[in-house]
Image (cartoon, rainbow, N blue to C red; front, top):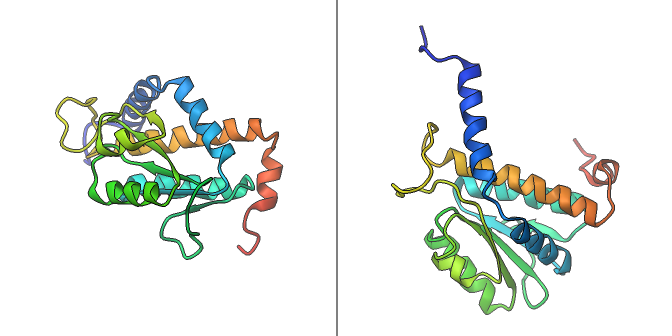
Amino acid sequence: MAGTRRIGQEIAAIRREIGGVLAGVREEEARALVGAVLAADRIVVWGAGRMGMMARAFAMRLAQLGLRGCFLGDSNTPAVGAGDLLLLASGSGQTRTVVDVAELGRTRGARLAVITARPDSAVGKMADVLLVLPGQIKDDPHGPASIQPMTSLNEQCLLILLDAIVLMLMAATHQSQEDLWRRHCNLE
């Protein structure tokens, strides 16, 4: 037998964890991020590891919203400068590559938006726009407890948070799902 727990129990436990973390997101911080995205000429999104995977999904939605968004490292990533937004996702806010990208973006004149669990982190302190996602991070014995491996909880919450931001952007730009579907890749 593969274990004593059942899939329904596991899903219920994960849903409780996600709900607990997302309940801590502040409305004014989410609105500030939406405003920064809408005000930007271009939005370059990035994160390392699995946080980066969630950030990449958000970059795709920005393009489907008709905004000039991309994921850092893709071949279509433009130069950034004044008027642009660099949006970084980092649970710890201390990942060396994320800190380096934040510093580069600021020296190029881009505004910096950061989603992190630690507002007092290196990238948190650099942020022009800060959204705290109060989830677990690596090597933090004081973060929220989770039954899930490593930082899965934080990564799941980031994806859901960014999907909620997309809904706010859709409302702010008066777009429907049909509008986004029209911009979806039609070469599949």
